[in-house]
Length: 314
Image (cartoon, rainbow, N blue to C red; front, side, top):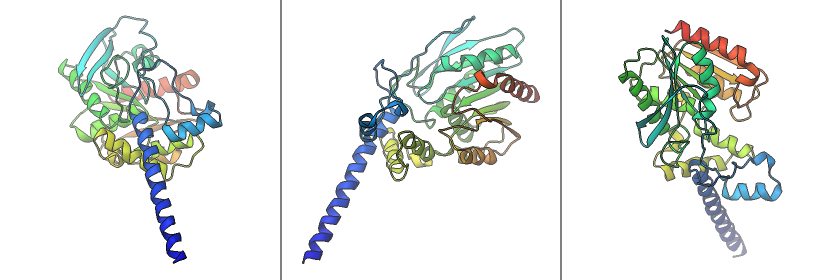
């Protein structure tokens, strides 16, 4: 009789823990995939005290809506495209352009963060189209799906440029943006001249695990709950969001950049995604770079690799 009571208590305790984990995960998933209208800076888990980290573990990281921090310092046009949301883009041109590069930002980013790359590409002779994904900058909505639905924004941008008569279209994505580029090429018959990928994650589960590691918590089993609820709250099966699987269908020439001290994307993920790419490809690794803009420290190497890649695939 005593043994039966112990088992029942254990079962109820496990059920309670399971429910609690789901509640925590649902909070995390909503904040992971929805921006708030607050103007406070994004919460940095690495700078939190014990109480702050406990609150973050339980209720997730506040994620203020990304806003463009500056405008281009040269002539540009603001263009609006219709995707799932109304997208805001900046289009910059150079005389006798060799082609156009569309640039897609990362998670919690916006198009102004891509300006340093755009300036280098303009200097190389290419028009640039900087895009705010849905939920970011001047685009509509407050939702992000870490590259899943953003693939539709990539497709809308490509089709706009193609409709303008551009023959030499290149797609550049960083992190989430790189995942969205891979998914767009997997889902749609797009034919860019080449793609430039910066540190894409291998699977959404890997990206979720990195989120927990950032606050000193093991990814298992919380990352699985987070991915499940993120999909439920956003209307898709999130475990299927796998850039490493999309890459296997991509035959477009690819230039792949990675920082060897990336704290968000493991080298194993990079090797898996790069290895899966089916077309001509080149991997450039920056030894001391993390999950960040590579230009401040590796500008010369980045520009030279981009120049060679773009010229080879015109």
